Image (spheres, helix red, strand yellow):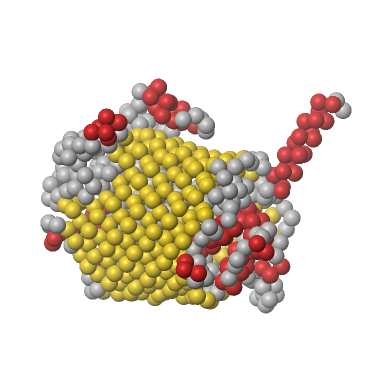
Length: 571
């Protein structure tokens, strides 16, 4: 055998060995209890997680990497409470197929060691080349809305399947049918835009009789471990980029959509490419397919030190109709490393560009300071002039997380300020806006707002999780009854219609105040099976048009949640 052939074979074998050492798997779902637990561990450890472990800024939590991170977590040099040790066990159980812990196995499996062989899996198959986990999904929640003066509800039933083949190919799917009896502000959202946040096509047969809406939820993807440093994810779902409660990059507020995501992790750099297709929903039960538009996103962040991370973000939103409503993806944007703005300029295109930067600084093993700055458009001379030019579109975020606050174990606080100028994200065409199915792809309030959020989390017992969320916001609504009113909050409207070129400010239009406070308690009966209670107070009041924009309600609900993330409507 020639020496060149031997070298090639050796390199191939080495590459496959490297892939095997970095097993492919599904990712932890967005909104999972695991996310906050991992954030706590990262802060308490005194160092940022390495890219091959996980990346909190890009919400990249691969199950195999999480299991490895938790199994090797240095408990001897980290001050942990008994609840922290319980959470470590939770993370090992939740990712048992990749964990070395023997404690993930059930003491008393059911039906001849067929059901619940492991604490977190209703049914599983684990072998050298293949693993499969199947879990039921259920979310039953019932309550009362004082504004509507009738019951509200959530009824979700489905199944979740995940697994991997030869540690190279991974897969995940969750399908469920959901029936919702919405509270007053979700009802108003539907009456305004004919959609429900997070949902697609709605079945309205029971709306008039019992005020419920039915829809089908389905997400799924495959993952490929292309090399030790690159994994590829393709499917239908959501992504969240950022360190905060909110993000001005990409959030999980809208309905699932088609995307291709490439994660490259090398040295201290985590580099993410996301290419996606989103829909322009026009009218309920529209007989034709909705128009499509596309985006190409690059998000790179680097651990400059063990405590400081800096990120850069860019997105191009575009549509290529060529005379047709459903044009294709422009291959010019498939380049994974070039800056997209020069491509856009060279094409002389009307595409929408978003540029941003963020940071995270963990310190004193108790704190995480973070922030974002995103630019949609601006003219530097107009920024300096500070005359409220309408096309100066920026958004800002600054936040702080404080864990084990005031030396109380597992008492965690978070404070966050967000502000978006009027017309942020908007474009001359609705097909170039950062919107999917009439649902904002970033912040649920759109633009033309400022907001303060505080979150209190407390885990007084291993299985008891308490959370209080407090949101105060000021935003400017459009004038009701005027078809072309556009003060900059609704990012789906064309910016070609705007009342004034100068003198624009945050909260212009119908100035409205939002107050939303809720307390929630969850008790985990067994792994990922929660009894829940939530009490919410929400009020909106406007300077004028009080009959139209003013609302006040209290909603109390109790429920049970099984293998599904908490459902929240924080807007």
